[in-house]
Image (tube, rainbow, N blue to C red; front, side, top):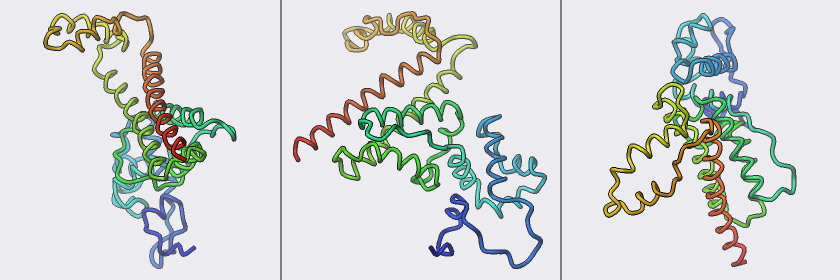
Length: 253
């Protein structure tokens, strides 16, 4: 392969060798060290803690010197996200597509939960790094027998990934908005009590019926349990829709 034709940003993502510098002293840093430092800072203090100046301070260099290893703050974020997104173990061969995709989506959700800064990295481009491609490969493998076209397979994985990402971001935002010590279930029940009497059944008949159903009744569930249950329920709805589509495709063959 002609590595010289690979853009610098992809070269760094895939840790390809760079052309040797002709002038100047040999650097004591490399892309791996810079990215690992940024990931460590983000793990400890969130995405805002992994700024170029802070990374430079940790490494004992100037912020400007880091541009030799990362082209921009945007590129650093993409390098960090890929480095922090190592894929889990795929389902055993022969597993049904639904079981395989469920495992794939749950593992993504767990990754986002374990490293809450990862889903907050802006999506600047399609998957390009080796770990992101590994996630894509694992997801596509689950749909090999589905007879969906390639566009539908990509759409399915994009939907599932987006659902897992949004679920974690929503959980984070709701947690930030709650009083200290209050669980998500307690917050939902408090919301129902405060709002249900304001909802006129004639003006909002469906919403009034929802409140009357008791779906937001008091619960002893922890916030972790509520988040997991909500994600699992939503995931099954998405998979139900995908199952219907796969069934339609198979029926036309």
